[in-house]
Length: 601
Image: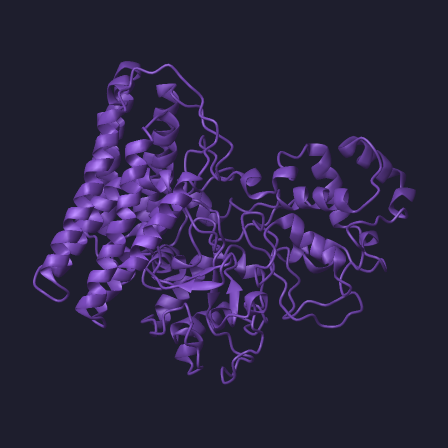
């Protein structure tokens, strides 16, 4: 109990330190208090259902009922508490995995609703442990309750919270990330949509009716039709996610953008990962690249990007003049190199496979082991590496400036010639951040611009988001490990990749383990994007698999643990996936629809 109290105190202290971007003040006739009370009442209801759950006991008649109702109430308050205190809200409804604290070196056992779900549905706990878990969740809810009471709802908080919740629906709810054991996340989608309608009615509905009555009617009908579609069949395996997102959820997000603009209450902000004006989460400009960049290299000019593009292809940036960025990241090979392992500046093999650079800027971790926290620091490491560019970030090769083209490019970008490679690194990172891939066959179809998705491709998407469990790590729509809706961290996983295709020996590369020497991290690697996977074979950090079929077969068997390797900290479920041969073919068919390489290079 003392530990629980200490945890709550620490969370309260941490929550007080959160800073928000500047909130513009707009004249408003909206009374925000009823919606704030709505969020607060549903958090109180969450706590009451947790009390009922505790009284019911671990394995009794109404245990699952009270748990599901606690989740329903929390989903209605999640948008606001998630905005006000992302860390505590994530603990309350985050993955049931241990958390490593870098500052203390301690490993914190999993807590929250997802851990409680495991306890209830997998029946491997004790009543005492069950009660402790509930008390911890109630403590977290108490912190969130305090946040709601002390921080009034206003236009920015309202619109950002709603945008984040819509992203949760697209990514976490559709994939079952929220409820990996019970499969309740599809039915909870209807709850979240009803919650959106409720707070809309309590706040800006009358304002929108005054501005555009037809827009209000459209929004009401879209929400009703979406909820009806969910309730028709909300089973985890059978739910048609493709049709739901394309025909129901995307129109809602499009209408919501229009509603925000019509309200004239808030103009959006560039301090978040989203472009708030993008009609869906599947547009070429849905995400804000500058959010992911270092603060000293945001909003680059076209001239800086142009310089970075020229430098990207120039071998003179390496000390011996044999390597450019494009040596390993070839545009014709999906900005990878087509090799199992990359090669160094003398032609010898490096330790790991070369990943694509497409959409690489939308990460918070770089290199396979995730050791670099930004694109700029990753490029700096390549410059400093004796096996790669071997050209310190603090040096600069005057040989480049013998080219009169560069003199002009540097002058246009920076106003003068550089004295170190820091300017070069910033320019290259600015160019790499433009290498986006969001105009694939899938994107065009999910946006409703095209209608040429085959039944197999559609089934493959539903499998990817559903029982194949791909999207619980490769989050839609980026399909990498950067976790929605806050996009503040990129996940790393232990999956147990073998040394060879015989699948008999575990690869000896320990990945992220070298940073802290914790057993939890042994064999841990960053989750890469699945976009353009058709072009970027071989696969895995060691390039062990040559085909997507081999990759899927590895996952079907349950990863390394399923192959028989001793992996106590594997984050991938040990169970085999029940995927038929046709399922696997359809899954590959979908993955190939994610191919989209920019033509200009």
